[in-house]
Image (cartoon, rainbow, N blue to C red):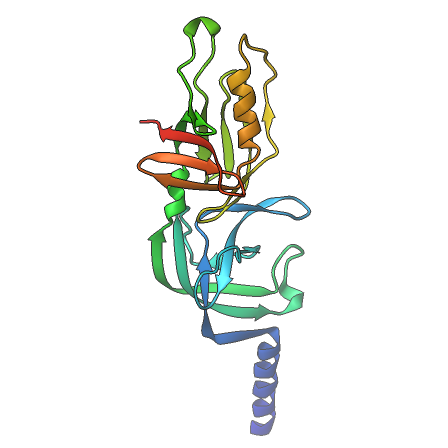
Length: 230
């Protein structure tokens, strides 16, 4: 009788072991500071991660799973200790992951400097040339932009038309927009709007210095310069 009980216990334990395998050794994950849109059957918001070591520029990978226990706050880069648990295929939902990730510890949480761009900016110069305040009689506005990293979107006015578009990529100094949509008004003087639109479609890099935002092309030539709106 005892032998039967022992055999039953061994079978039960073996069955449990095949249903899930837990990797007890924690893994180090870096988590980027913002949500991105991950492609799929239906686009979803997800985080980006890098594994182990130090953060490498341009090496973020979309992470479709959840990290149980992580309360993600955009604007911060996280260094996490995470365990991985393999789940029995029979228990995986149709749209689920075969691996369960669980937070062990937040090792670091630090503000991401690139979130300084998340603001409203008024145009000062195009191609290094100062832009004069428009005449009120022309019913024009000073071009301005609003950058929203939480939604990964840019919107604003070129002085005549309102425009909007996605932020495709942003790194420490790299930035890519587009494609843009806009209203289709014609204003009395389209010189500044036309120059602005030509310039913003060439943006490849940026920097923030002394409350001013600079946009550059891929060769490092200044395209647009803005000042922070108080």
